[in-house]
Amino acid sequence: MPGVGMRCIIAPSILACDLRVLGDSVRAAEFAGADWHHVDVMDGHFVPNLTFGPDIVKAVRRASTLPVDAHLMITDPARFAEIFIRAGANIITFHIEVAPKPRALLRKIRRLGARPGLVVKPGTPVSAVFPFLDEVDLVLVMSVEPGWTGQKFMPKALRKIRELRAKAGPALDIEVDGGVNEETLVACSQAGANVIVAGAAVYRSGSLRGAIRRIRATLKKNYLCDPCEG
Ligand code: DX5
Ligand code: ZN
Image 1 (cartoon, rainbow, N blue to C red):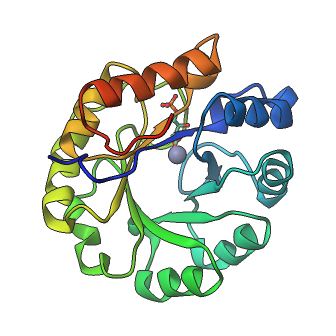
Image 2: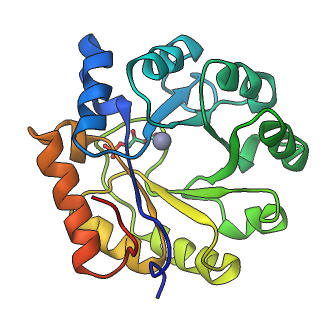
Image 3: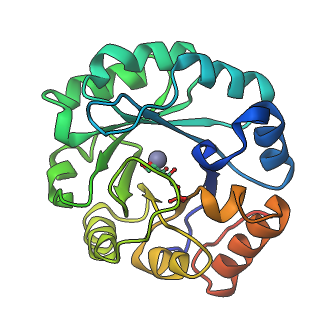
């Protein structure tokens, strides 16, 4: 019963929004019922794409009151975590693959007032984060290779989500990211994910409100997410 008693969070990824009107987009997502804004930070080293720096986090923060979830896909998270927190990020996740001292960084993030989390790429066993479960508020399981919005969901993420939920119990927020849409989210939620990142499925759906409402309804209908607001 992975969802029972857990909150359900819908976090649209701004990577898929119309960046010409970033402020309007995130405000519209907030009014349409989103819970967090997911901001994909890519450095061109850890992933072959380059995206957003701290000024974009500041812009999102100014445009909306929702928590900002910064997903750091960068080779040196220890150098930049504080900068993103000062810019207004409320949740900071970084990749276990590039963190020589995850425990120290998780503690630092918490000390600085943000919620810390770890991320695993599709090729990384989820057991890599097990030694740090006492330090994290959330774990993000990637269901695409990091880099772009609009990729196809990789079902092998489901086994990892199940394994993590079994190990961590109901308190941990488990975030799934990549290729999640109205179809794939059912299996994600049944496996134990309660934080749903959705880029294209929300921002490129034609109707933010409709997409978010349908995602929430799908979660509710399956009794996977209780209590679930909206
Ligand atoms: C991929 C990013 C994802 C991506 C999700 O590297 O971490 O957050 O934006 O977009 P969709 O939901 O379109 O796959
Ligand atoms: Zn992401």
